[in-house]
Image (cartoon, rainbow, N blue to C red):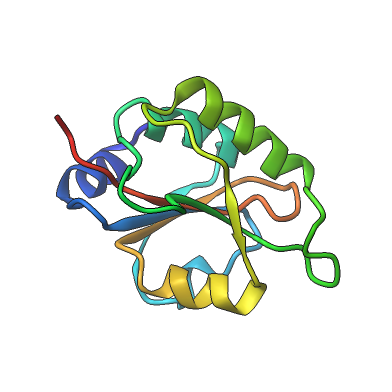
Length: 135
């Protein structure tokens, strides 16, 4: 699940850097950061694998962010509910996922260390993770 390119990015990231796990519809190649392809995997599978080796930042209130549903910011898509379950079960520091408006999410993703473009087909299957300290 963790390809050589993804492992390299996770190792190269420093505390506070962010990585985006994106669905198949996300504009990963055009936002600017390095885009790592994981077409054969779901975002949930990649999230679980990433959290098995990367700690979440404990010094910020929002180390995990997803995109709000356009027109219904309080909705919780299936993919996001799945992400929360994985964070609760896998993360070193389980946290509640926070949300960002669609274009704010794109802007934040544009300044991430890397984007992992998965084969996720569920809508809103995108999450930004902030790396914590490896102890």
